[in-house]
Image (cartoon, rainbow, N blue to C red; front, side, top):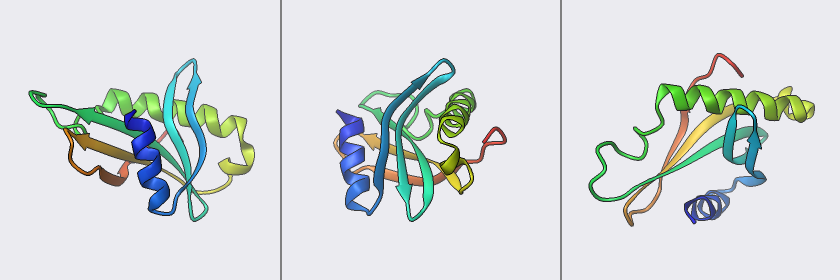
Length: 111
């Protein structure tokens, strides 16, 4: 549900979906999108009331590494995209608020 909401919201912002729920042995990518020629790997997070950390803070260094490795696998399968720029974004939902879009949420040495 949250991934679909994030996807629609990002499309409303002008991004185009390339892939949903890319699964591989090293991890999963919620959304892969295109933003004016940049391949964007989007992690969607939701946190409800009582969470100890925010949705954005829940993307730990360990999770970032898994995302980066999955992105590397995706790019190896799509060499035309591998030649271009890419970034990692987070769309964070806190309860029923509007999503918070964090562009370039983290840098990855893997990709």
